[in-house]
Structure formats: C-alpha cells, structure tokens
Image (cartoon, rainbow, N blue to C red; front, side, top):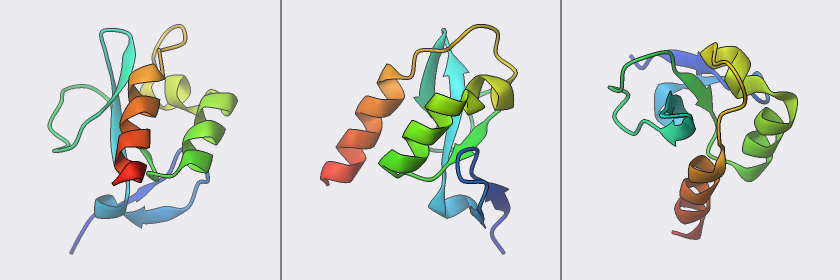
Length: 85
C-alpha cells in the first residue's frame, strides 16, 4: 500500500505517487523525484494552481522550516516541463 501525504497547497490527501516531493537545496526549491534527498520534504500536486497557491501562501518555507524565501524558479520550470509532456 502506498503512503498517503498531504499537499501543502490544497491540503488534500493523496498517495505519494500522485504528489511531487519538494526539498530546499542550496536555497532553491527542487523536485525530489525519487524521494531520497536529505532534509524535510513538502508534498504538492503537480498542478500549476497548487504550485501557485503554495508559493503565494508561503507554504514551502513553513513546511520545510526554511529561513528566508527559497527560490521557486527551478520548481516552476520543472513543473512546466512536466505539464508540456
């Protein structure tokens, strides 16, 4: 059985396989495809509205206990790539 996680944006619960794990790496938000990178992870649906909502509400720094505001650029670029395929 797949573990259930909660999206930091919409707060809906979903299996891990339906969500992206996001970590802070060198001050940037990065997708952790294999869920193996060290540190705290935040889970988000791979949808533009969930990503926008999480960034606007400051959900990532809070969930990841990061100081300051991590750069969401790499995460947004990755999400656009996923949605184009």
